[in-house]
Length: 252
Image (cartoon, rainbow, N blue to C red):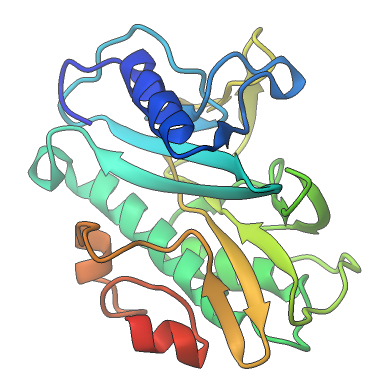
């Protein structure tokens, strides 16, 4: 993710890397989605379709990748700053940091017996205290042999009866946080959702597995993954988050 590269080129790389590993890029042809990943730049909240616009220094980009391998989908997304962290302005860094921290707070809440509905309040309380807003029109979801299924994971305070967490459940938490208002516009492509006010948006996502003693990120980073500033400077979790289970803590 560098100045001058297009999101079409990123999509080509994602597609080739998926196929090389014996996987299929789940978004491709999913309800007529035309590409192999989602690339959401600046004011795009989610489901941005890769295109031929060259990325510019200081852009913030979410890349959302899902692969189907051996009968199961693995869904994750990560933020990137075009040109590196020094290219971002202060508010962009605060937006990304706040998004990451509210996400990790919600991840730490996951364990058997807790209510899915309570995830949303953890996220909303953190972001509003920092002057940002959480999108209410899109949500996390169950994932496994089916790409999107129950439960729906709402990223705002709610009382929806989404059930209780149990070992073996797999799902995503993927808050979309905006620097301005969280209301959105849907583009004519019926996929790209952008903020109405043009404010930027950030997002993180993991596929999670609930275990008997906590939770693990099935899409967690590996030893060669770079540590980003939001992981390095987080006051919620020191370093890369892989989960709360005993096995995950050993890998950290």
